[in-house]
Image (cartoon, rainbow, N blue to C red; front, side, top):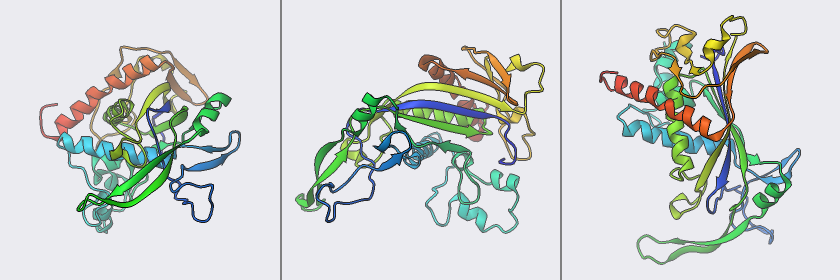
Amino acid sequence: MHKKLLNELRLSFRIRPEGPLLIKSGQEAGSDPTLLDMNFVRIKHATLGETVYLPGSSLKGAVRSYCEKIGRTVGLEVCDPLDTEKSCGRKLERKAKVNSGPAIYKGLCPICRIFGHTVMSSHIHFSDAYPTPDPENVRKANATDERDGVAIDRISGAVAVGPFQLEVVTQGEFAATITLRNFQLWQVGLLAVALRDMSEQRVPLGFARSRGLGRVSLHYAQLEVSYPGQFLNDQADQFAGRVFGVTHFTAAEEYGFFVEEPLNLSVSAPAVSEWGRVSVTYQHDDEIRSVLKETVEPWSRYVRAARGNTP
């Protein structure tokens, strides 16, 4: 499902640390006395200069791991992507006859259908999260603090390693974007649940999460749902107040899609047709949360159907 772009969801949001946050750069102090034992990852940004940031890979890893946990909790068959024998990618690689896109997609577990695996690229993209360009916010984000830590021996209870110093971010606001292409409505609902729990500080990011680091909150800035190739449609208004999954634009059987009806929303926004695509945009945090909340029902229907219950 990568040769055509049938629908696309872009969610822009702000991430705010709600306590110490550390995403390690892997650069240790060594002979440089100005560096701490564990340093926050940095990059030279075109407009912000040298700055701390949150890598998209860290965001994707945290969200994927949590989505896997949700899937197993509700009784779905979810693979372990690190299992060298039973992961989706390894099983499909051993099947020499499985070499077409539809056959590969059908063989993936629900999570790998969204986040990808070694045999199929991801349908979801997480951008790096940089400090919003307001000078005061950039200053706050880069005003890192130091935190001391030790490693405790689990047998003796004594200090095994340390003390060592950690560089943590405690302030600022970081802008990120998630893009989900050729999506089903249940996939948006699963993502909405994971992001809700992250916003409620249940899905920490980065290093030392079990020690209280990495708690964040989210503020939604914009949600755009677009349908490329629909600019010739004379009834673009049918997209206002509704969300269409990929099965509305292609046959469900070929890829083994779960058949879904369009989702009617309680929050409406006008549909705009330009530049070869119809799009609907929501720009207020409360509206976006309402839309995401309503996509949880398709996720619930998918789970019931996958478990063999009545949809």
